[in-house]
Amino acid sequence: MQDLRWPTYALRDVTLERAEPHERGGMRVIDSAGRSYLDAVNGVGCAPLGHAHPRWIAAMHAQMHLLSAAANSFTSGPQQALARRLAERFPVRDARVFLGSSGTEATEAAIKLAVRATGRSIIVAFERAFHGRSLGALSLTANTAYRHPYVRCIDESEPADPFVVAQVLRLPWGDLAAVRAAFATHGPRIAGAFVEPVQGEAGVFPATRDFLVGLHGLCREHGALLGADEIQCGSGRVGAWSAWSRIVGDDPALYPDILWLAKALGGGMPIGVCLAASELAKAMGKGTHGTTFGGNPLACAAALATFDIIESEGLLAAAAAQLPTLQALAAAEPHARVHEVRGLGAMIGVQVGRPGEQIGNEIGDRLMRDHGILATVCGGHTIRLLLPYRAGEPELHEFWQALGRALEVSA
Ligand code: PLP
Image 1 (cartoon, protein in one colour):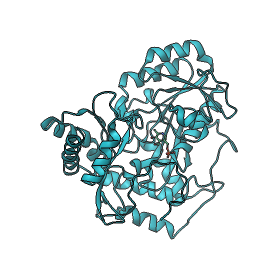
Image 2 (cartoon, protein in one colour):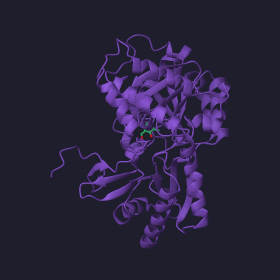
Image 3 (cartoon, helix red, strand yellow):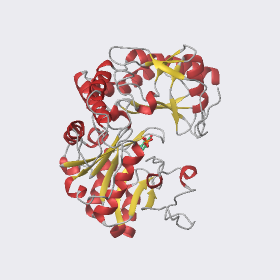
């Protein structure tokens, strides 16, 4: 059948139909030919409970019978409850919450807040960063192929593009000396520094504690805001609600000023949120921002159910155990062509091939075709696993065995 969608994605030749049912959420998906796959793509990290968890379905079902939509000029119970839950679980002081529908929309909210709250226009972002594809968010995104038709950085020679909403200063990842130098030159114009505590699309690279704490200190020193993009690494994926807390610890003096989430937050329903300290959120007065679907009662109910299930089923601990489990399997049975197994919790990158060798796509295809495992490839060389949080030794063992065979064939 002809595909009538825009050709924006490199398509894999599989039509997914349903998940294998499971009382704690399905971890395997079935295609239109009836073939079953272990799903480590997970809607790119959007199904932390696996698919179709019965309690998650029941919560949405209950909400569907009450209210399908509520304009943001009103409020609704699920919105209020979700905002409170977010403020309780995430490391932002006296947080106020903007409710949206996607990751890139949450990044937009963060950019607008940083610019408005400081009255400054430059945002520091890092090499290899990914913050979304809408125009403002895109200006922070590193990949020039995604960004150049629309938005340019101030350190690039081409003329500024009229779409620029905030100017971006891109700096090397992990390089505090470069951040210090940027503040020395542009300090009074820098609104904030935005960072993924674990870079995802780049190839799964956790930031060090020293880098995050140093960045926080420099922002404080220069009156700039620290923004943590936890769209991929937040919502429990790394084995704690927040990757910032997992890496930096829970000292309120070191909290970021802005933190935003999407992906796993809704358990599969589209939602994106941005938290900011209350004194900063004041800058976002009436009419400064908005979105029709944001705070949709169904999406909020889905997110609340996701919180409840993750907590009652002990899924943070399960997620935390994934990386050490795979690293133990790798140590017991090393594969010569695996360069590194890294990440945090249930956000895992397995770098394959020699440095510079881009064999990720070939191995990803073999895993799918020959071994029934779906995984994304990021950074060109890294197989990324974003399994449901409850996945453990059996699934990781299945992956590790399959990877060994896929690497042998491709050698
Ligand atoms: N920021 C990060 C760190 C992401 O990983 C992503 C998506 O992969 C985004 C932003 C964009 O989110 P969305 O695709 O929901 O717009």
